[in-house]
Length: 188
Length: 239
Image 1 (cartoon, each protein chain N blue to C red):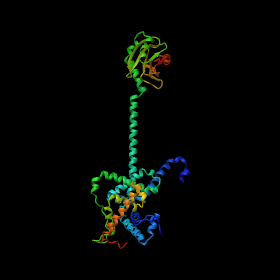
Image 2: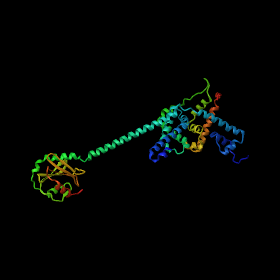
Image 3: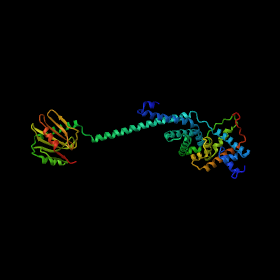
Image 4: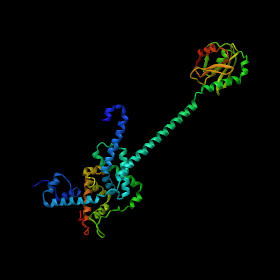
């Protein structure tokens, strides 16, 4: 309103208001997607502090090329693509350390000692999946992406994605079935 | 319910494992064709819920705030960097300009005045010379600088090349009505406009010409207008 009222002469004001708009949109994007992005990152690299670095770096890069993001619905896939690239770069840089990372530290929410929750067991099973199976199923379940979208993000053809999803779920189901002592959380 | 292309069990199971929420008609038809198939898919969907819970790791406390802070700081440091860049660009430009003017500076006018008088006093003895030279001698010297004088200048009592204001020039002494008149051709020294000069004994002008400038100095009381006009109007400079 102010802009109309004062006319064109204060175009610097509208420039700064564009900046503010951009910042508002960016902050909204961070708030909406940082959780899913972090989850994707941690299941990708299995290390909480590397995952946080990846998410930070991803959003920094996203901010720099924020104007390229035309369709905000595509934002999640776009961010994940950036994060994958960052992960590949980081992996290349710090390969020796990363190779030592066996499992991430998982929260065992078991009710008491000697108990192991279903959740914890499944988390262990997910970390044990090879990354080529782990990645598509995390994208499907956490990201809510369709097979086509996953094949776009991973740059794989659709049949390969379907095969990997099938094998990922089979492996997880298998390890779930093979844990006779697993107890579900009864209080949920 | 006989379908010619009904999905076989193996393919159905593969599809269910790949995506339990598959919405293809063929898949849904098969799923709804028997309790067993429906249970199979629903069991997988329940398993997916468990997987979702397992994958649903909580992000660290304050991560969103840290991301936004990080972005703000990086913007700030970028703008600092930009400022530093602009500052260093400005400094470079100033340096280049400074060097340019240092090398190509038109020697300042006040400087010329002092130098011209200094040269007159250094060679005061020439004021009394009687070399008896004329325009053709003058033109020979001028030719070195690509100049030619087309008018009459009268008797030349002294004519020589010397260093004036640390640059090569022509020093000439003519007869005036109140003593001698010194004329210095300064081809390498430019002035923007005529500059009057004077001290206790002499007065004169430095005037721009086609190539550099000419200093004309006479005793106080000497009228220099005539000679100035002659010098202003009769030069021909080959560039």
